[in-house]
Length: 203
Image 1 (cartoon, rainbow, N blue to C red):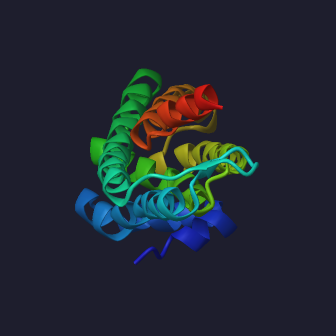
Image 2 (cartoon, rainbow, N blue to C red; image 1 turned 30 degrees about the vertical axis):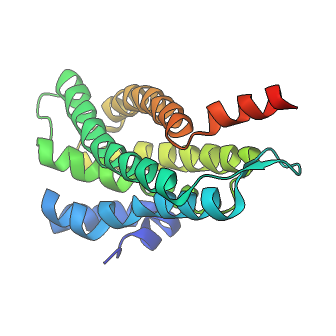
């Protein structure tokens, strides 16, 4: 369970080769990696928004009810699971454009699931949901995700380094767009946008 998390963070080049050699199935990926890691930002956000409350670093915080946070968390969790699948399809589509022998769809989704590891881990800071802290963690997670992407596409998908650079750059651009959409949904789901506006108007 979660056997590759430390390897991807500590020695990703070696870990990509090990993951490739295992020929993992999508079912195993989701059961032993994605379902568990995707729960990290959801659980931490639930705790943070119900116990601490969203804040900008000052005294004013906005807390959600247990029921509101639960509903938002479930939707957010499902969106993240779907996002891994979508990014995998994007990688497959990009690979088909730039190489004569593209990897299988399942391989691309497995790859996407492991690439997302730093982003899932960055959700730990949501247990204390200060906006600037969450943004900083998100940026750091995105940077390391990009690093894993650039390393992994040639090593894991068997694409040349030149073609891999093009595929990874294209995938990263689309992934960043997808991330922005997810962040926007997160704000809406956790009720932060509406509540902060009401607070500001009330003050």
